[in-house]
Image (cartoon, rainbow, N blue to C red; front, top):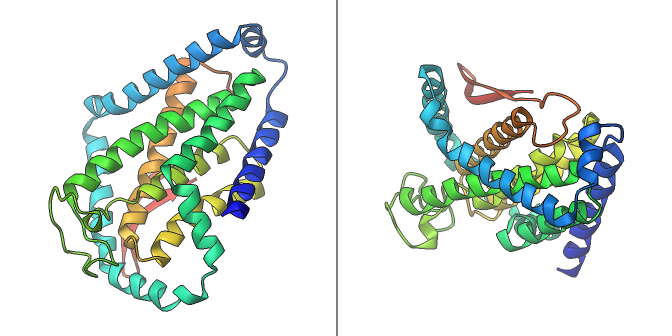
Length: 286
C-alpha cells in the first residue's frame, strides 16, 4: 500500500508541474488575481464551487424537449447495454487471477473517497499557495463535479438497490431502498470519482498522449471494480457517462461566468444513441 501511496503522490506531483507549466502568464485577469491575498482567493474559489454545484442541480429546470430526449436515450442505452452484463462479468471472473493485484489495489485506492479528496486537497492547496489560477480552477472543477456526481450516485445507490455481481450474480435482482452494501451496485462510486478527476485534469491539456495517459490511469478503478466483481458493466458505463457530462457542464458554466481565465473555449463531448445490428449504446464524440 505504501507503493500505491507513493505512486499517487508522484502522479499528483506530475499534474502540479504540468498544469503549472501550461498556465498563461500574460493575462490581465490572471495578474490581477495573483495580487490578491490567499484568503480572498480562497473565498472566491469557495463561492465558485457553491455556484457551480447550484448550477448543476438546477440545470434540469431549464431543460427543453431535446434535453429530455437525450436523457431518455441515455437511460435507454444503459438498459440496452445490460444485455451484456452477465457475459462481461463471466469474462472478468475467468481472467481475474491474470490481472495484476497491484493494479487492482491501486484502482480501489485511487477511487476511494477518502484518498480521492486528500489528493484533490493537495492539488488545490498547491494551487492556492502558489496562487496558480489554472490549478485552482482545475481543483474547483473537480470538487464541484465530485459533489454533484457523488450526490447523484449516492442517491441512486440507496434507492435503486441493484445487486452486485459478487452478491447474488443476477444483474436484474433489485431490492429498492435497501441498506445492504450487496445491493448498492448501481452506479459505481469508485468510477464516478476516478473518471471525474481524470476527465477534469485531461481537459487542461492539448497533447493527445498526455490525455491518453491521464484517462488510462482514470480507467484503472472502473476496470478493477469489474475484475473484483463489485459492479456490472452498465454500472461502470453509466457512472462514466454521468461523470463526463457533469464535468463538461460545470466547465462550461465556469467559462461563461468568467470566474477564471480560460485560454480557449472548453472542449465538449457530444453524446448520441447508437442502435444497429452490432452496436448498442451511448457514443461520445470528442
